[in-house]
Length: 501
Ligand code: ASP
Ligand code: MG
Image (cartoon, rainbow, N blue to C red; front, side, top):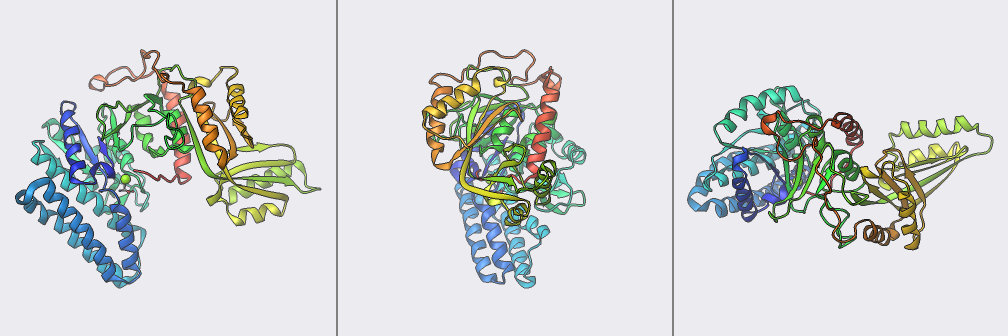
């Protein structure tokens, strides 16, 4: 069970977490928590200020962090027990203070130093949550993630070493679980085999939960957050949006990539490799069943699983200058894209021209000037990619026609179209300003009221709990899982940024 920053942001929130974990005791939970909301950002700020030489300003920020934690500890534990926790927390705060003073002296914050600095957020939150659990009658045990989750030394985005992590978890966590104790540990933070602190990259607590879940061969991985799971579309764009009950790994990965902000796509990797179902649940609404992500999802009455929109896209039109050989032209364009490691989303090609889309913020000036050497180049900003995802569209005629009819009836002009590359999505480009209109029309048509009903449970699919790790796994899941894993690995390596808890 992983609880994000907003789920542990205050005494009330931690209180709720304790109740949720208590309700799951029979299933032997292991708990992974993020730093309290905003803490990691504050640690980053402190580090930068200290490394810039302003030690006093950094220490002042530290002081407010300290007060927030002590205050929460007292609210959670009462003055008496809070007083016994205080020295445990203070040990870390004074280490952090020493580190900030050191930074101000040497005026340099290295990636290795950054990992050490950021580790305090999750160390402190997890220690506090473990104590809060104990006071509420849970047989909790704090576990140091740095002794369980082993990574390489790529600081600030370290890569987990599964074999070593598995061994460590067997040694440190399994004995606790068998004694019916609830292990509580910080997400996001890890260490090299030699014990040097590392982190998995911002937003990495989900990833930690999946890694630990996979290492323990868990029955399921629960990601508790502050929204109702994954939604059929962004509720800010379309108030009729609702929770997706079941979704496949492939579809979830596609959604994450095309703008859904709930899960870090790389999060799913360890779960995909081991076919462990992942749930996204709301810690503020225990009645909601959230979203279940499995290797295969049962077919639903809806054609699509969800609609996403990604703003901030540029279309780049590249037309070969006269006299340029046709085959040489395409090769040169792709080589230029490659040299600049340009993450292209959608591509359309004709003999002597090519259009592609890219996030505007990643479109390098140097790339454009290089392309201008061989072609006429025109860029259009403020575009958006709308993407409809669903595995069931495969082999069904007429779906693209209805999508584009709806868009036409909404009076929206389509700039580029792509279908087929991933086989489970139809995506197209429109002007940013047309996004709300287009999404609302599509959603009204493809998700009429009372849809989203699961039609049938697949016999071999992973549904809920798997008895003692020996149950039947989805038969066809291997290749689907492998495909999703490959595309996720690629996309994760392209530097996906997650923007919410
Ligand atoms: N606390 C870390 C961050 O803010 C990790 C996480 O929340 O998942 O990036
Ligand atoms: Mg977070």
